[in-house]
Length: 244
Length: 185
Image 1: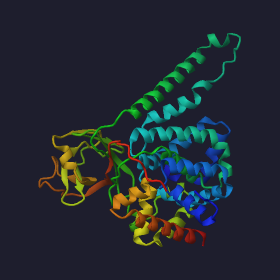
Image 2: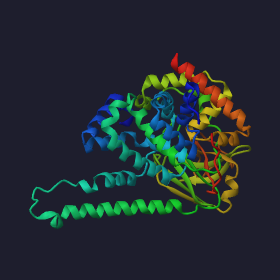
Image 3: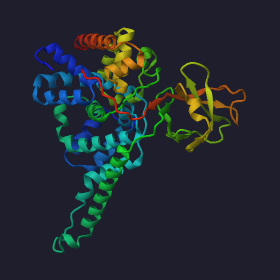
């Protein structure tokens, strides 16, 4: 990587911020970034200008455990100090409590790490965030097993609205296929034989308003209340990544 | 509500975090978590990894909050960049399949009226990049949007679009050049 030319330097900075560098290329770039002040200026330019685009994404709240873990990692060992130090640290209940918390946090981190390196399912699994037109996320969908979809409420609908909420998969080509009626205000587990076949070539998921019991025609008949594109999580067959 | 939080408020929360105010940190997290989580989820694709990214980033934000003042960018931009960087650092994704329509959101930018959430980013920064994106041609916009929102490499973009790698590299390079000219004007 020659960085003599300002143009090349700026172009690489742009690609770095854009996200086209992964793995080794990215790490190599970061070594240069530590050392070359002009490169830092270029990266700062692109970060300041490109990053606000991310503001257009729909929103989705992370689960509460994320905050508990952040707190555990940062503050578990900083429990408010006891005024009475004479009793010593070994008698200090808050110290032991903090240590316990810290250990729990560490265990949680290790567990995540173990889950992380476990070979993943062999079939592609999907995730999708379905948002309303104003970009507010309504449901989050994931596929824990090949024949199961979990529909998780982000923002529940009003109960007894007189409508059923029906979930559809919209293939790249062809007509929407029903995945069934989902609950208005609670999570829904959809377990369907042949689910994978139904999802084949799925590009989007959408929820429409239908008469109670679901669409009478087998195709969406009412308003689409939220939709989102499908991200497929493919098996982790390691494949060398193209370097820039 | 999060939607109404301004940059000044976020900057003030960050300043208080720099002084060790845990209450301010909790408020900062509540205000920004949902936006930042999606930024990561788009790139890493797996929910438990996006959760880890968010944890790591907030630990980082707490530890570096005192240094924010030197960053000279809008607070949301600063935090989003931290989350994007961390996500791109750990992403491993051997195959690519992303649905088309929201990658091309930029093509329909005219249809997107500014939402209340826009106050979170520097409003002017956002207006400027969106104006400049509109000046790109279709192929440039498409390739750059795919790379940015999903963190795809050149070859992943090429694979997704079924185009030769060289063509994709050219679109991205020329698009970025054009953006630079526009952003600097």
